[in-house]
Image 1 (cartoon, rainbow, N blue to C red):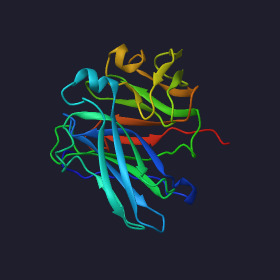
Image 2: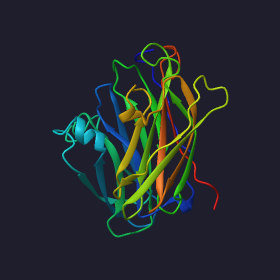
Image 3: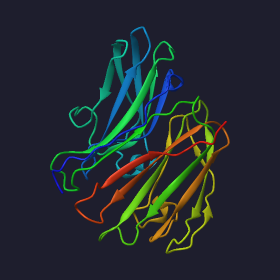
Image 4: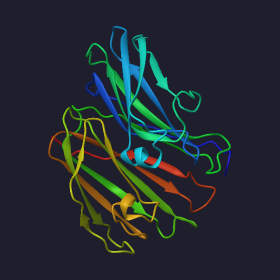
Length: 269
């Protein structure tokens, strides 16, 4: 119920997950529904590091809220000590504009391979959407590929406006050059609606993201996925590596956790 705390988590990190660049495909600053993403960065090296975060607006944010999403937002943190962390928290940092959504690239200023990162998505206390939390791990170019699989996608099942489940799919170009991203939707066994489709490639600049929101009955925003559907997706990129996250929103009852998140999976090397 509203005001009840919920939990989010992430898998532990391996030493090989540390890098000079980390990417988070889903970042939000005080959305109208109360959601924000706190970006956490930890220095796992043995020397202090300076870090720069570049927040890149989603193209749909640029078109829907041009006064908010006017360009990239850059933030710096100096001298993060070994094992210490820094964070960007839009719930309290009002210099990060309300209503903004997109992705972020976090990098060390000296190219040291020493940071990991985590995103914690939370609603504000007392939000009209109720308490919610969903976390996911950052990705770097070394621990993903140009092919990803998202095993659990839901589109307005059965009617998100009333009492239902629905999700989002958020894909980020984590390479150093523009890339064409292709998404294939595959219907799940026993899905109430039969839908399979491969979308036309979309070109993404470095750090930019592509988003699909299956809570909205709008083909321009949901990739044409119909209501009352569930299934999976295969994502491929022709020009570089990609990362992707899916959120799952739950409105079935007020006594269950209304938000979950997971990283889409790259095949074994």
